[in-house]
Length: 117
Length: 108
Image (cartoon, rainbow over all chains, first blue to last red; front, side, top):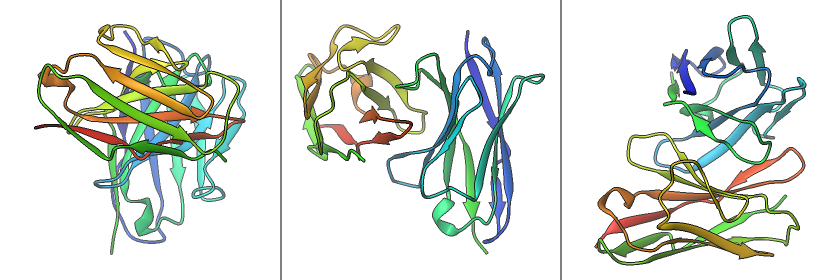
């Protein structure tokens, strides 16, 4: 059974940094497409970043240059390093995965990131 | 970049009724790169439909997807109490994933 468990969220000041993690089980992160999707309070879903099985990485324009997606194959874990955070980054961050590039088959329960002074 | 517009914003229906949700793309795309997700309050999204009309594993057959070109539809044939939720369509194109803004299906 596929399971994704996010961690690392919390309260951070504007301009600060945070590193999110997503522990995976039931599959291996380096074989699948791994993605971060976020949802601001009361808003819809926004794609943030994806890492391909081959290692290529892609980012939404809103986070490009500030966020870095990576994976630790030895720990079967996905990460999102978030730098220079602003209030607009406040959201629940979901980890998602799939064998197919087009859509997201399984999702974690999310971790809340709040950027506020 | 393709923009997805969902309508209506809110759909008020009673259990047992049929729900028809629309997702319109700003331009035509040739491949079946359209998916639908359900998000219940306080929960993570769940994949319902992929490739326009293929139900994901474990999804009941009262959910169906259809469409082509720029117009896509999610139909719930008979609403069950657990179907009252927010639904999102999603598209993929050239390493860019986009979501519609969502349709809320609420109890009338």
